[in-house]
Length: 190
Image (cartoon, rainbow, N blue to C red; front, side, top):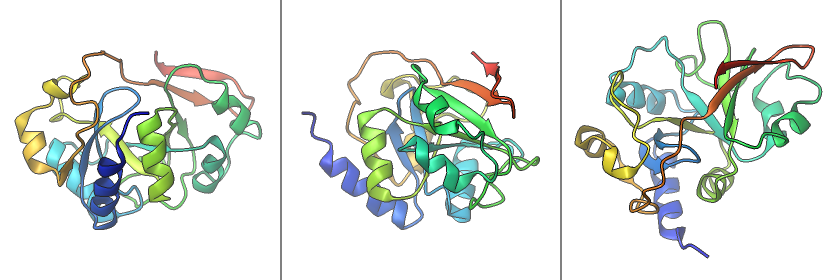
């Protein structure tokens, strides 16, 4: 069993105080914060030098949690999400309980239910959704592994996770989809 208990405790402490973490996700290295904290979300936009109109992705620990944060999910959303074999972010209409600066102008939100052991443990222990956006300055390459993360990013976060810093396995960003009312899947990013 991999020990990341110290990282989890430190992350939760930072997230509860409205801070920003640099952490390994189920895809790439990401910046995270409490997805319900408007000031924390604002801090991520500032660190990334990102245009505010471009919304951020949110991580949840379980597929059933989607119904807490989306007003009108597809009736079979839990089984649909549980069937994904690769990391998949779903763009949902009618986001609930998130600050305005996290939600897209059309009211949509991108949510990924993580299967990654570290991310799942972190979200479950924090008991709230966590922002997950690539740990890069806007327009720069996405850091697939820790050594690719820009020093400017590392120096502007409140905590850098130690777990998986030596991992050299390259993963791609998540697949991005939208699910129609009829259950059809539209792939926005393969």
